[in-house]
Every structure is written in C-alpha cells, then in structure tokens.
Length: 193
Image (cartoon, rainbow, N blue to C red; front, top):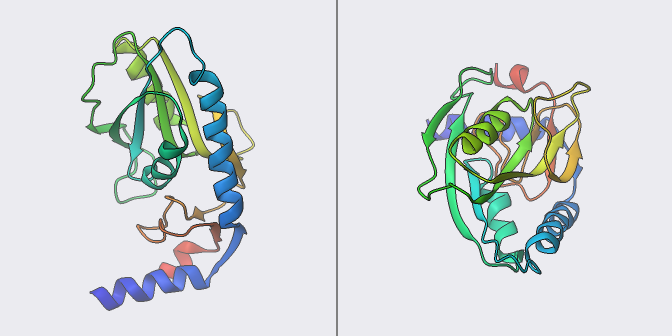
C-alpha cells in the first residue's frame, strides 16, 4: 500500500508545473503579516484578537504566519469541511469548533485558499452568530474563478489561477501539502485513473 501512495504522489508531481516559487510564497506570507501588524500592533484599544487556523490546509500558512505577528493574540483552530474524501462540495460539517469563547471578540480566520467561498462564508456567519464582534478572513491564496463568490477575503497573500494547485498546505488527494512553492497539477484525475 505504501508503494501505491508513493507512486501515485510521484505521478501527480511529474505531471505538474511550478507556478509560484518558494521565495514568492514567503513574500506573500510577509505581506499578510504586515497588514495584520499594521492593524493590531499599534492598537490603543487593547484589542486582543483570537486567531483561528482552519485545519488541515491552513497548517502550513498558519505556522509560517504566526511567528511574524507582533501583537498579542490567542490562537486556536477549527476544522470545517465540505469535501471529505471527495473533491465535490456538500454540506458544511464542523469537526472542531473554537474552544475559546468568541463573544465580543475580533476573530482572524487563517485559511490556505479561498476557492468557491461557500465554506468560509459559512464559517464567518457562524462565528458572527456565536457573538463575534468582527471576523477577518486572511487567506494565503485566492483562486480566480471568474465569478462572484459568497464571501471575499479581507487579506490575500496572492492570487492563483482556476486550476488544481498544490503546495504550501494545499493538496491533491492528500499529497504534496509540504511543497514550499505552488504547483499546478495537469489532469489529476487522468493521472490517478
């Protein structure tokens, strides 16, 4: 079984092209950090935001972003999915809700990609319904779909084409979240059979 996964993962990457270098990825993370630091670092109101990383895709982005934030914060994570094992949308399922009370708080949601936007729209509304004062959406990548999404990110690291992108937390069938740059997988379904 291990050989099967290794072969599958290698076949995907062999049929891929790097579109964003690791250096550009790190520059995008720095830009997101700068925007957040400008908002919260010199805040005389004593605002103490709660940062929620969306697992599992946001783990790489979150791990790179947090050490660059220069203001006091609390960190937790949420696990929300629409996909499961399939790459088709469905009902939003909360696997892990925030352990911290969000009432009256400013919440910064950190996610890897704003794709169709259904999941992040749901997350934002649910947190507001739970009493959050404000929900800021900070995404590493915003996918260009050519249509209006149900929610817009407040902070975007970079924009990616409407293709199957992997790396820096984004995966193809569970593979290649660990790539330091971004790659477009061509014909992923054909490669995997």
